[in-house]
Image (tube, rainbow, N blue to C red; front, top):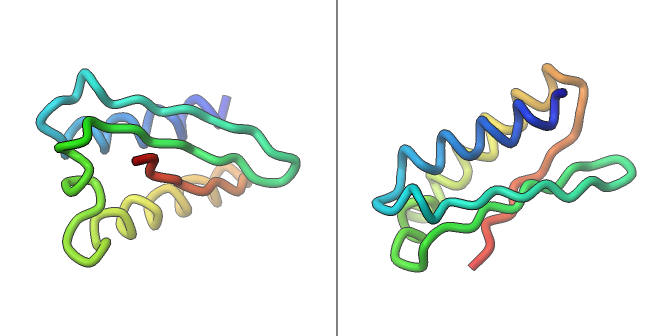
Length: 81
């Protein structure tokens, strides 16, 4: 159940940032100890989810980390180009 919450969280945040929310795709890759959350957006929206000097991506990762800790999981966000 926790994975769906994390996936929905990343998807909601990404869709709020981009111009083409219909192209946001979030994929979970379960590992033994860590879940990798892969985020794909339209090419022209990549800068919006990364932000200046990576600030937006860092903020997304911070929120993901806090939510994962609450659910006693370890999740990592990968932004796919």
